[in-house]
Image (tube, rainbow, N blue to C red; front, side):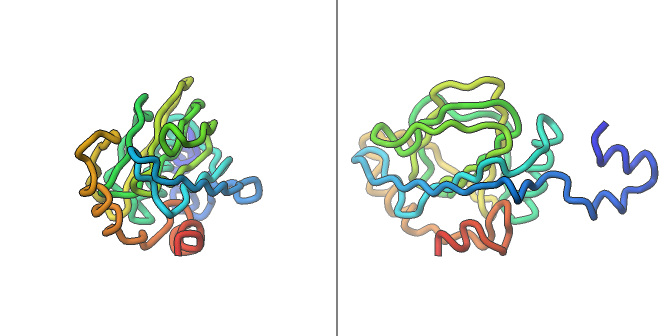
Length: 192
């Protein structure tokens, strides 16, 4: 039984709101990764942010927690799934990925980019244009969302995508809130 269900059953639902059940602020670290345009994948001057060991909830309760947390900070249009096994990027929106189960090795920034291991409890904020690809995973579960519920496109670094993709990326505003920290830090401090 999860904590919310326990509080509901015993009539203590108002208490559930006062207990932060998932944030690991002491053990969290932020990694900033910069990627340059490789000719196919445009990437972005803004760094990709990887918040490691950020939350403790797992599986369905972890997914629900991520959806609620992201939505409370206006990152919506969410979905649950994984990461495509081919290089791709989005030109019409930044993206957040919250890992609620499993592990994966991601190739970030296109072929010239970096291979990064992720695991349950991690949150990745991907600036528009930054390539990402799943090289292999075990039991991977991700919640994805977009600032202001923006619609996203799916580009693969193919001929003809640019310069429109570059124009889309340049026109995007910095989000008004970080998907995890809201108006108090995270990308608001790093992406100024």
